Image (cartoon, rainbow, N blue to C red; front, side, top):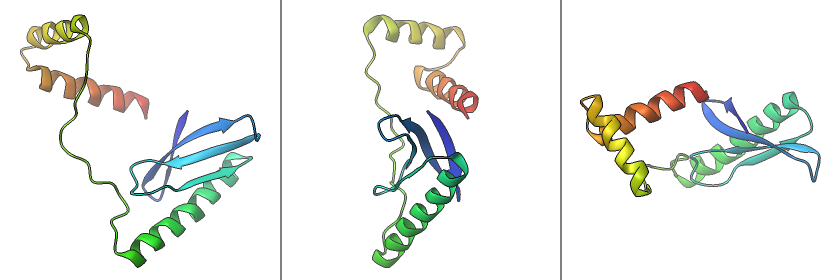
Length: 112
């Protein structure tokens, strides 16, 4: 899966072999806005149309198009992984929260 940015909104792109088309789905929206096309250029155009329809509906209803996210993230780790994270954080003089934030930031930067 890859990401595509349309009007500042991120969409995850996948290929659906059952229908032989690319599928895009916007992330972080208050509702669904997906789009399909056989070619990447057309996919971008379809995404633009889908997003505009979604944004117009949100404006008409007075709704924020983006989901509001909390500042907290809860992770459920097996005990050995949690222990390894605690040790890695301590080795760098950080709390587990500080260490995890930095690890996630690095992963996000390399994924985009």
